[in-house]
Image (cartoon, rainbow, N blue to C red; front, side, top):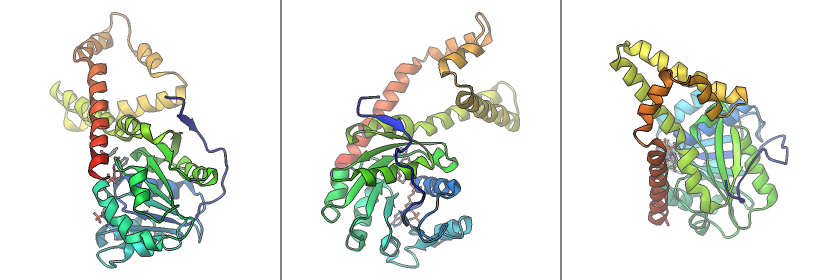
Length: 297
Ligand SMILES: NC(=O)C1=CN([C@@H]2O[C@H](COP(=O)(O)OP(=O)(O)OC[C@H]3O[C@@H](n4cnc5c(N)ncnc54)[C@H](OP(=O)(O)O)[C@@H]3O)[C@@H](O)[C@H]2O)C=CC1
Ligand SMILES: O=C(O)[C@@H]1CCC=N1
């Protein structure tokens, strides 16, 4: 962490959220939506009534409405002005479309944003400056980098505020993401690095579980047993990390008897230069984010 980075709960306790518009509810905005609703934090206009969502496809909107009956789930397929209708009257707009779709969605809604609306982008590689340039002057713009465990309240969200965002606006967005996990405030200049670690991180772990599962099958377990062994090992290890108060290093040491079997297996794994390989992987993610920022400027 740099000096500019702080992981904390919001210092401003809030009792409720303004009306929320989630534009583009796929994997990530869907995870945030689920997490915010599960947190039970009241949203203006009723328990879920103040939450509006948009998708292009009607089938996706219907799936959201079925999962969260109080949410007003709009579909571009049925209503070409869905994004405009969703943001009208919203206090916070959460932009969750793919990076290359951001400019189009901003152009659709820019003239219906009420003064004081906070725009929060979750898009990778789209800068605050490029978002602010597409919106009315003075619009409060924040960039966050969440991860999908937000859907079960166990996310990590990096949060960077644009110029002109007030302390109260930043605290409100911080509090929103507190409902779905831990929030780390940082300078926007570091958000691509954070994304490489925690935004993409769940995928690294899931890839590891897949590998463990496949390897278990190769040494003779059925697909079903391999899945139970791999999944439950990772779930149990993550819970132990969360609940024991011990570091990953301490917990690894506790498993690794000197001269025992784990030591042999770890020695094989270390042959691949895992730290070097992981560092190279993180740098590849950062480089791609920088490239996307140039593409979406
Ligand atoms: N997935 C992750 O773990 C993370 C993703 N992100 C960022 O989140 C953003 C979304 O990624 P992800 O959730 O994975 O992508 P998805 O493709 O799962 O979600 C994008 C959603 O946007 C909807 N959409 C597309 N165009 C429009 C439009 N014009 N109006 C309304 N809705 C629209 C799509 O709905 P439909 O198909 O119906 O068009 C789709 O459901 C990206 O910018 C990514 O960088 C950030 C952190 C982590
Ligand atoms: O893969 C991506 O581009 C996004 C950003 C972090 C996680 N998913």
